[in-house]
Length: 368
Ligand SMILES: *Cc1c(COP(=O)(O)O)cnc(C)c1O
Image (tube, rainbow, N blue to C red):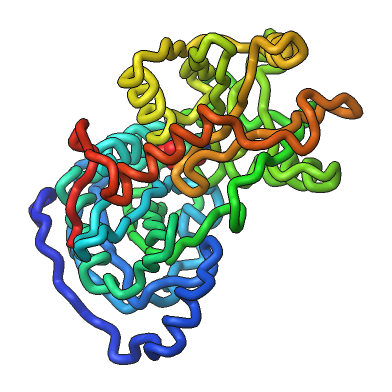
């Protein structure tokens, strides 16, 4: 086994989704509802000393995974994932956005969850392989794309608590429409007071499935209070704003400057977040990563110092935040329209991703 050999074998499906069926799915993809015909896989095995390597890089028909009931992932949640998109450009070529950043983040998550790191070349090749065979699954409507979900699971059958020595890395793909559906409308956000998503020294900075599992109770609470998403704070200290369940947060100030919570170890470093910081600076705006508390948010909205708030992530790109609901208190106005700066950055970012705005930072990687 050569750990960095990126050559994949291909076992293609003998029963591809009928064209009419696929077209019906692509006509209204939603998010995460449908999956393409194939999956990319690379397995890992280590010996007792922890020495090991990746092997068996392959494409297989999409389908259920045969797992031993004792597989570590099913008991201890040793799992990480990534989320990115493939965009079809006007000339038919297909590109992904800042894949190197996703590869690096996957490996940072791997270190935290005691999983093996995947060579970047294998990561990129897994995307090229999968998108190459399932290229007809990329919807071409405005703002539509093929969502790519690389993930890594501990497959070793062993109930002792230690890092698994058998691991599987996989990629699945799902045609994606508009995350919150249709037009860009501000969403109401619920302040989580009963639940935290991360703590110092925890796994908040890793893209790990367990973080999402632990955010679901808070998400249910949000929905029960008429909100779309949850905001997590550092309640143990100063009520510093951290992030939403799966998106980072930005504030636009009256002077045009942008502020986003600093990476404190409890916040996931979003690729969208990093890109917005860069695009803001490209425009000559002051972009600051610092602590911003709920009190500053409340006061800033009341005084007019804070003019816009938005959330960002690969799935939903940029979503304006309307009202923040903290118990019975509301911060912000109902029915506020999406802010100008929010929409302008959103348009620029989507433009780069879809090839209609020049990619001056070399953020795009061609897949097909
Ligand atoms: C994935 C994720 C984000 C957004 O990251 P992007 O790379 O921009 O998609 C933000 N917060 C959490 C908790 C995440 O898992």
